[in-house]
Length: 387
Ligand code: PLP
Image (cartoon, rainbow, N blue to C red; front, top):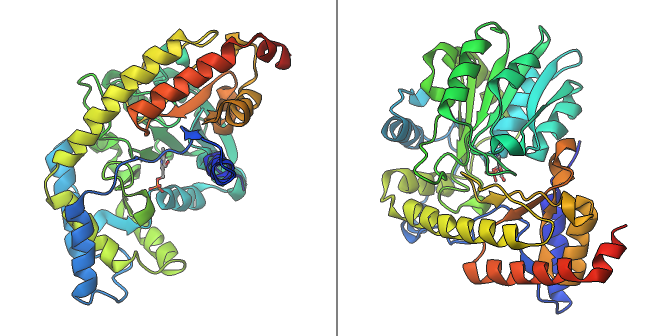
């Protein structure tokens, strides 16, 4: 089993801060906003009202209904509350899905660079990890053709993620059309679509959900949740949609592990989906401003070039021309420049030559971080140190 190095960098940055260093953290992928107050109040009310017990393992009915209504409102798709499973965070869905389909002799296709837990869990199950390279020249969108080329009769699961971590790539609708058409040739492969950043797209780009394709609904698992959209990473609240027989297995996994999600948190989840959505747009608009600032700033740094991310809140600059390898550069930036970022190889073999910067930090801090990086990369001694 692997890890998520973003948590190690967070711990290291916190340690340096404790020692009195001024560290700007562009490492961890979580919104720097507080959860909107009406959502917090709903949880407080639930606690005061005595919602202190276990709930149904699949989640409370009004929350599952709110999820189905939200999917209808946003994506115009029909979903039954009975297909929804409420889980403690987005990650739990990938844990369950990979456990279900991963086994010796099975292949699982996953994006690289991609969220590190995909590969970690695939290896844990004994399945063969089959990396699908997402490329800078495609704006880090995945290619339908390349995905289909990786499919074999052994492919049990294909993992897709758009908008994507760590690259900010968004795959265009036409490419998804092509992929879904090609998947008809592989009816035994399940699909896990990680759409946790679905409401964070820019430049007027609409999110294309895999749920929009009825022909794959009987083998599609949707991963989504509240962490990023409503600034709720610490609440641990997510949901998934499953074809019926698989949801029954997922329910059993829930009963055998965490029983149910914290009851008050589920009431907060209802308030988030059914309440006013203006905070979602306010956050998105602020991320958009920062996205433009970070991309422009990165492209001014010596030896650095960055494509403009179309979604999520990450930039994934190419740093190959600095002469540094990605992980030593990330360490040196933390130690010497006080800027926490993540080395691309923490997201897969195809991440070498890149850094991930989360722009879920204030515009002022982003500007200070870019100045520090400019200063660091301009020092002649640095270039020598990298050799
Ligand atoms: N999927 C992707 C692509 C992510 O980036 C993350 C978190 O960073 C998750 C899933 C997990 O979300 P959660 O914090 O709700 O478990």
